[in-house]
Image (cartoon, rainbow, N blue to C red):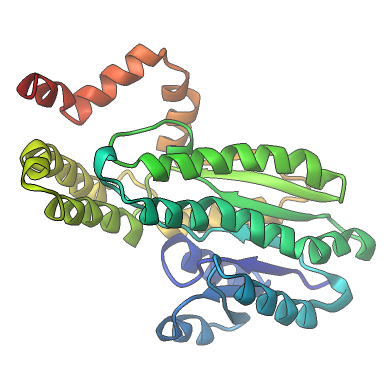
Length: 295
């Protein structure tokens, strides 16, 4: 029986690499795109069906469901990989509510909406026979520990962790595995965008805000550039291979850490006493100096 998978956010970073990896593995891949200019990235790939869908748009979601349902028929959908995500960085006191809501819509509410919509196709696998369907929610190290300047990215990814655990219990009643995939810092466009986003948010601040955060964000940007150049970070292709292995597994575990840094954060950093974690972040981001300067 052919296996079909839906990948959200299929045009860049982890999503595009995962789309390519699934197609190479012989899956029928439905990969979502939002902008028509990005459709070409998917249409040139053998075994990939581009699906236009803004994950925050109910109308797009309904149309995507009808398209996929018409293609998979009674065989149902084998897997959904909720990968689409956006980042945002800004000092908490200057976070814009519209942007905060957008981050939550894309990163947290979209996995709920997309999964709930496709439940009938996923549950159909139980009737069709063979391994049960699975939903893989791509979270982040930022769903395990928090960091400065990414308050709503943290909030959204912490939410994904909790959402997925609850889904695990509910969806198993329908014969669907819910899986949490936790990548570490990955060399994707999102990493660079997050750093650039922080710099842009600094430019938009008041004179007082720029004075308060100029040095802090210069250091923050340097940390981002250093991360992009690190040879220890996982590439999108490496994360994609792991996601394909997770989906290939007949009975996947609930949780997978993807990358050594993700494992370190999950198994060590997140279990440190709060005071130790706070001290590490304060030193890493040089927050102590700023506190003293503005005391």
